[in-house]
Length: 125
Image (tube, rainbow, N blue to C red; front, side):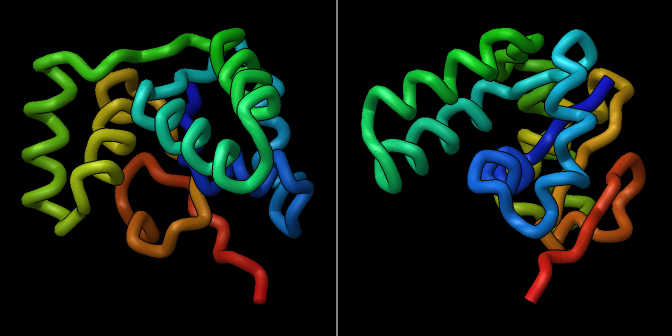
């Protein structure tokens, strides 16, 4: 199972320098878990950078995957992980979603670097 952080989705959507790193995970929709928080962040970003029609199209892409809602189990795990690893709420929820599913989190956000169950690619300068 895979979880791709919002930064990875955006990198892929704009065909950024790391897009090819994230592409295999994002194309494996049967094993891709999308936290509803990632949907929120993607919709917000796409509305700001593009328009509503594009934003809805992006959400459509996420709906082809396994969408994971924030439930009590993930919320409590996120709180524990936030405390252990000094993560912000959104990051902790995304990380907890991956950990709860027994999957890997793929990201280019440096605050995840070195955490168990994380595949981290540094952002290109």
